[in-house]
Image 1 (cartoon, rainbow, N blue to C red):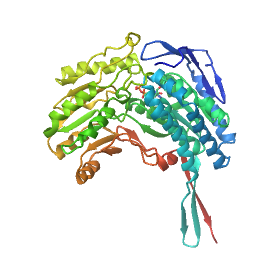
Image 2: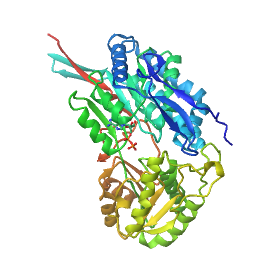
Image 3: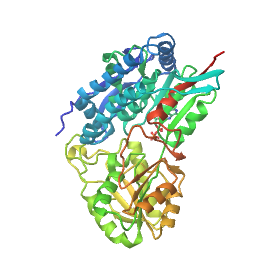
Image 4: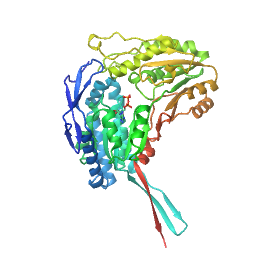
Length: 490
Ligand code: ADP
């Protein structure tokens, strides 16, 4: 049952080590998507506040102790942040379930421990890095140093706010940068705690800053600000394009993780006992609000009927309900606006002649959830992979099964998309697994699994799914400037 305290929380900016109101005292409200109750009143930053926060981050970078302190001291403080997150795991998971609407159990067992791991991993990883040495005969010696870039703008989305913010903050801090974090306006609760967590961990004031407000105002102001040197952004492809344009005048460094429309390819020799439950996860985790969702399910025609029957049964068995309940597997969509956008795809599917296999409506739930933004897990079948529901990122609990006959056809369908974030392959044939994994144009390919991440491995997208890679040394390179030092030896 719900154990989260029912109260309206006040969320402030965190600037230079202090929680603060906006300069004009403006605020906006955040609702619980499961009930539409107002759960938070959040300070809404002005352009002046953005100026202030970026100056604080600049001063902390240029004149503070962070950049020059010993690497082990810096990494100890980051590791301490990770420990505090684990100590406060339940509270953070409750907040994440409250404003995102994601099942508490998933936040508690998956995302919040992963958030702590993000910080610890990059602190440990940074300490193990070396540089390169290039001797030029006996005359000169080149060696490299990796130095922090400066002030990082970390702009994060609403689907996994805490986990995705720490995924950027870990390498950003470990490399010695200072940060201006801009969480998504709909889901500021958990990320707002990172200010006090950083302070308790001994991170100097001005190193971790958090500012709230609309992307179009606050996000744009951060992107245009001359004190901000780089932007790490996760969000929609459309917003990524806007950020790139707005950051051009100040020539910022960018890392973008954008949209996806992954093909989940099920060959006739797949182990369906594994493929079905994992494909259900890939379709409906976080109500399908996952950029890595396997939303195009390509099924070899020889097993189409049995796959559809089993997948339908599994989708119908998902427990949809109150995100705070331990048994809930799927919560609501994040907001009214997003709910309407996703719901519109039900009409599009109808017009496009897709066959509804299951779902397509509003689930019947307990009375207190009646005004929540809930949709049933929805599965369509469509022959034509060029239909809008098979091409556009719906970011909701709607997936389409598409048939194919041959490997070549599967690959052609998988690659006929403007996205290239990830792909999933189910087969027991090793050679085919490699062939298809090499053929799919996407940044991550999972064979007989999904959502498994080794933080050393690169993460990012081909095509319109992103620019650059994060993870392991890729993250550290993004958050660092490589310097070459050439010494004459004679
Ligand atoms: P969605 O469209 O699903 O809400 P967005 O990509 O717009 O996702 O949002 C991801 C993050 O980007 C949020 O923190 C949001 O406030 C921010 N954002 C939105 N528009 C802009 C913009 N023009 N410049 C910078 N950040 C933005």
